[in-house]
Length: 273
Ligand code: KIV
Image 1 (cartoon, rainbow, N blue to C red):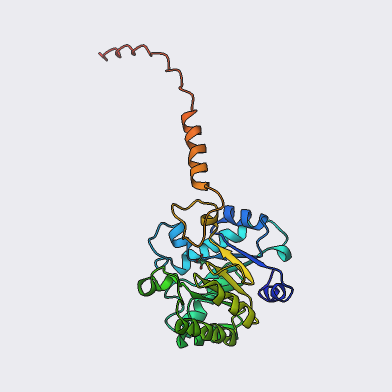
Image 2 (image 1 turned 180 degrees about the horizontal axis):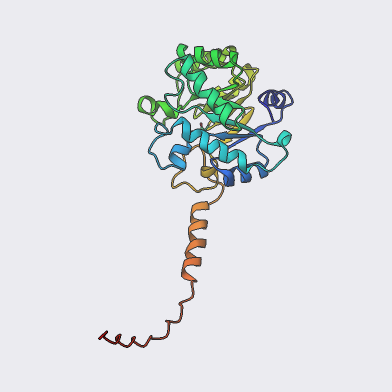
């Protein structure tokens, strides 16, 4: 799957399935489940690395995890899902040169074929334009943008007509700047549905209703492995409890070992004369 194939999915009305992965094990599961796209999201900062937000994850860590994801894929190259890696906080906010260097590293040193970044302020649009003109496919991300947690929190976004019009304009701007797809997170369903109709690029939703061109989920949330899931991303199974119960049974089932036979104390060595 290549970035351009997502457009074909949209044109043919085939829903795009996108799931996150963070290592070889999760990548193999997601590939075998039939995902079109694997997102190495910066959510791995929280899900895998134990940080409180997505902000601390570094470019090096994103590359390391993307390489592990690539090693987990088992299909022939042409049939593998598209790997998209998040550009972490501060790797693209400091201008075009830094962004090209960061995104270039991702494409050069890992199997990712595209990057994702958040927002659509004029500086970000300029960065998208610069990356795309450098041959780097870019996926946009609007609505709840976790790298702006200290400004926006994790609340639903675009709840009033003014902010909805702003988000629609930002989505059009990202398309015009060259994004090949757009993630919209935790926004009203009718807004996301309208965007999917209006834009020619695929709109991939999370917490954005079921009328998008595709859906993306954090795999650990979907499997119920995380301690808590966002309200818009309920788990499919109680994975955490299932795993803990299974491991607990294994621990409890360990057989007590019979104690070793008592050893006779060694005779004291004869003193040297
Ligand atoms: O980092 C991530 O996993 C994401 C998804 C929630 C879309 O950006």
